Image (cartoon, rainbow over all chains, first blue to last red; front, side, top):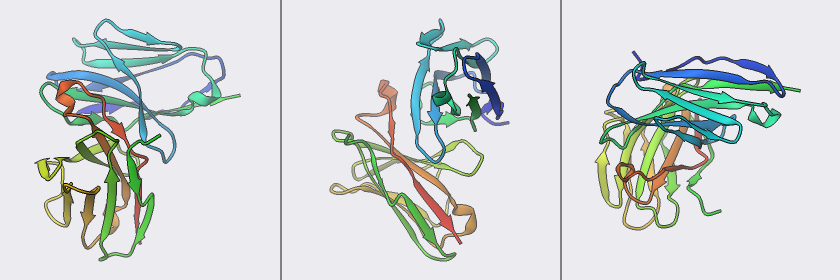
Length: 110
Length: 116
């Protein structure tokens, strides 16, 4: 079983819509959680860290459910520029290695 | 923006040739990580280096792959006798100290290797 699993999508949504997707992780020793964004043939860029209490950054809301071992990302009022692949990333306690999911592709259409 | 610099950005090699990928970390960063992204897959950790030291190479294939981060100059990921399965994007990342201390790592733009 992969350490981090994501629905690959694609999620095709109109501008202004809300889109949400999850990621599950298998290792209960996971400590740190992140969402990265990756555009086509570009490097991953940190979108936001995910905290236990859930956190929001503008139109983006991240939630963590440790009991069920999943993380979610919700994007409100989607913009064309939100079209990208969103990578779920997990780091275990006392480890420096990041474990990446394969990504969820979101396409926002006009 | 003196971010993590990788070169070449794109590299084409014939089977059996060698590929050398270079990475200059951000200014002030002494920790370098290499990740590989195969098509349709997530990034996979390969190796973690500090200046002149390999800290963890548990993600490196046992043969043909090597990495170094000399006292002077960039970190280099070397792939000998490349095969088609080595075709991937290779990302370098750096941090000021180890990520255990909570530092964010910053990725370079990647080097896309195509083996023909």
